[in-house]
Image 1 (cartoon, rainbow, N blue to C red):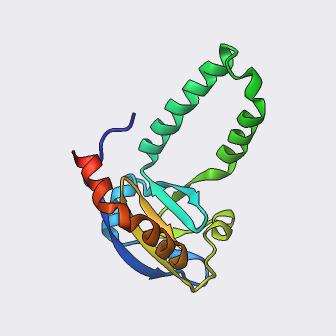
Image 2 (tube, rainbow, N blue to C red):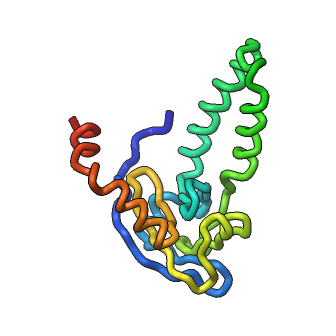
Length: 162
């Protein structure tokens, strides 16, 4: 289990991709998701959304989950679920990649991730603090997500903080 975040990552910024699909992150966001070597994990979340995670935290989460799955396979508890195991393997193979932020804050979005995000070069994205990670949203997908989530904000806050 990863350690609780030192600081919650919050905020909303509109940024433009350049003609090489590079994105300059707000410095305060970049410093919270990159390690000392400027490495971070870029992950596909949902259509129109990518996320950036501290590499060490991501590895702990993935290693913990994979250990549980390996144990289930070892003990024969996945025999009837090979199709699901294969599907998980395909998703794991394409879901995330380690990237280095240039100049401590500039992200080059890799090719397979560009299509998933769905923003053309030179297009705008929304950069969102999601407490434990930074999310990069296609503006239309972000607006749809807000419309869906905002009515339940009060109840969610009360549930998680109570």
